[in-house]
Amino acid sequence: MCRFILCVALLIPSTAPAADWLYLTYPGDTLSQIGVRYLKNWRDWPKVMALNKIPHERVLPVNTRIRIPVELMRVDPAPAVVTHVTGNVRVKPADGPFRPLSVGDRLTGGETVLTGPRSFASFRLADASVLNQQPSTRLVFGRLAAYGDTGMVATEVDLQDGRLEANATRQIAPAGGFQVKTPIAVAGLRGTAFRLNMDADGKTLRGEVLEGAVGVTAQRKEVVVPAGQGTLAAAGRPPAAARPLLPAPEAIALPSRIRALPIRFSWLRDDAARAWRAQIAADAAFSQLLLEERTEQPTVQWDSALPDGRYVLRLRGVDADGLEGLNRDHPFELDLRPLPPPLTAPAEGQRSYDGNVAFAWGLPEEAHGFVLQISPTSHFGRDVQEVRLGAVNRHVAQVPPGTWYWRMASLSDQGERHLWGPPQSFQVRPLPAAPPPGETRTEAGKVHLAWLPVAGAGQYELELGKTADLKAPLAQQKSADTRATLPLKPGKYFWRVRGLEADGQAGAWNQASPIVMVPDAPTALQARIEGDALLLQWQGEAPAYRVEMATDATFAQIVSRLDSPGPQARLPKPQPGQYWLRVVALGDDGVESPPSLAQALQVRRLVPWWLIPLFLVPLGV
Image 1 (spheres, rainbow, N blue to C red):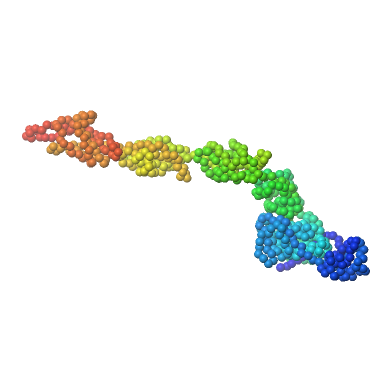
Image 2 (image 1 turned 120 degrees about the vertical axis):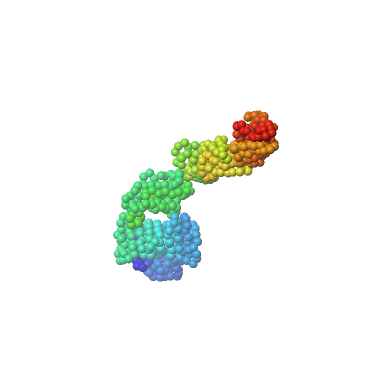
């Protein structure tokens, strides 16, 4: 892969030789004391004495600059201290596995730090420089060294992919330096605020200078990038000419106090911006970054409930080439607590059958009471019922039938209402009422049943049995109609009906109604006398019959009754006279049919056969 060097340096004049550090003498200084304090081997002080042509080791003029070669100076470890971690951040020592990164960890060199999406880490270097590692970034720490107490600190890190933001303190020559390596470039920072963005494919590095000036050299070409400008460096190409960064976004009436979620900000659109980056930090230096979002619209929102407190919003535009512009910082206060209580009952979509609704919720910290709202609309725009409650977690209210929405907010110790929580819906819908008593009509071995519809019933369930409690129904039937027809044997029965909802839930049964199913009246009754017997036969399908004989057509004076299991009967021949015959069909439970058509019968007195033949003369009905 083609490599080039990106040199970033604060453009300031330097009067000291590149390899010597200058020490300003104080009263009482000696070369041996200086050697003990600054040299790797304190006995090398004679080399310093010879370099500076000092005639006497113990006689040093005050306020005299002494040159000390860097290669003779003591070098100490200069760990980077983790000052902030948000989200999923892991660290891997040079000889160990990955583990979670924690605030207070000290990195001495050789560690790899990975930030996940929406995760951040900040580091404070030995010279008070601050390094902010952005989401989805891989960073390897290299050399971390300090030259005694000279203030010179050498820092090397490797940005393999992702984004860094650095606020480097002024580096002390000649050995102090802050160097960032990438797959295609090396950036050396000198007392500047600088952003680096290394593409994941390792082909493009974007740099933006916020303070100071940067010299960028690649392919034997140098580009000076002053504050407020940026450049792109692509592998194998000279760096692009520096160009102005997008101005800070124009924002009107950004809220200074937020009391409800989501956390939302909007600003004016800039046609030169293809996107915007929005960040929230707990400090103005943005070393404690908490939230970040890249958006293609001039608005951003977060649902995250950060702790109440003061924060800073940072906005900047992103141009067509991915260079990020100048920052717009806006301090604001988050005042959400006490948070709304978590709703527990009724659960989302839960149904109440009688309208006596029991509301229940959790008790968040710092809540000194609650406000409950019930509305027929999800936006709580009209007919809202509102109840202020104490520090309780339950309330019962009578609610009319319908679909309803409820939400709650907590009250502060001053009785001030805070954030509304998300609403939940519930229903008040009674089960179908018991249908009114229905109509019963019987004919030809069938019973026809009909009833009135009831609200909420998608279909109906019918039961028929022999007892009024219908504990052992003989028939059960479901119908989408409000009528039913059943075949039925003669007898006494009871029936009832109830409504069923679309999901099968059943309403109340109505009161059982009786059914009397009578047999059909016998037909085609015939009678004849044979010897001393009266023979009868008829047509019918009943299990039993009763034959009645009377001396009058109204059957007020019945002279004979006989039960028969079938459609025929044999009676003793009656005395001579006029009679009427009829048959009644008998069903179960003592149910009787209407009588058959009456048959007249005349029994004549016998005479000798040679006078008058014996015959039976029917007289009609």
